[in-house]
Image 1: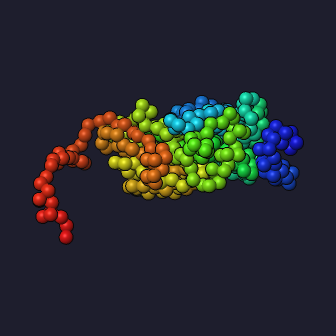
Image 2: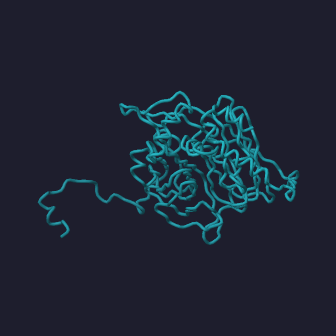
Image 3: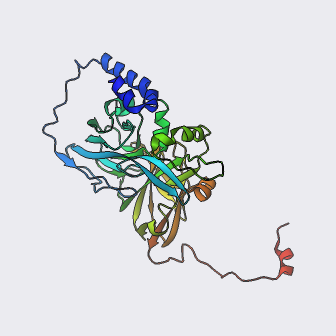
Length: 382
């Protein structure tokens, strides 16, 4: 098995071999005699078709009485994507999108994911669920070569928002992650979300914001390089990655992916749940002109949310959730409040809100007019 995988991957595969050996060793020492398979034959099965972010598949906010087996199918696609007007990335993706699609289940459900590694791909891939209980988050059980598929099932025991990402081993792990291979799963409490006092909380929309840091090499003239395939990009990309200074920090795979014609849309009075993930670096989400009415900064729904946040913190390798009811119409900017990353590197989204303006909340008392410069000294502070 190890020889076959290393041959398929070449030099890149050899870097992953120590990870594979450890996984194999752990399987050999596992004692399964005390762990008979659970009888899930009576559980209802439901199948959801994954939706491209920032949107999510249909789901219930409160769960049926009995847990279910929730099935997903996900295809791994290696492809070049344009991440800015002048920059392209040899991306590795879950289901063709950066970030990968968000999955939504309920606490106590079983997640059953069939993972396909396309025949056209070059690389070995897997998936590590931060939400799963078990060594390597399912990574050792989902390692697939091009042309292979596998099915993983795990019980969703902890409600919250969690990152998933590719983790094939060694230096392949950070490279695959910063090449686009991360996403999010949301595990809702069976009775739905609750405020700090335990009252039910509902949302009208979910927007999934997946933040990525990219490391695109430049040539001697200062232009971003373009590569034939992921393997061709590895050496140069690794050099930039190890400098820890991203060339781009973006929402949903591209500068401007959620602005302009692609801006998010909501209506005045709607409650929107923003789910924000960052698999590699820290982030500081902020909604300009709005707030986090309720914020699960750590993303874990067993913990009560914090109220009225201006900016919240998403640790690298985690996902958080924030609920806001839009009270005014207009264009809102949702940004990483490292403003250098928001404005100069790309981490900005827009939300267009339809409705009727409320002057009691904000009003321009006088329009801008010129004033006498001679008067300036009289009004200046001492």
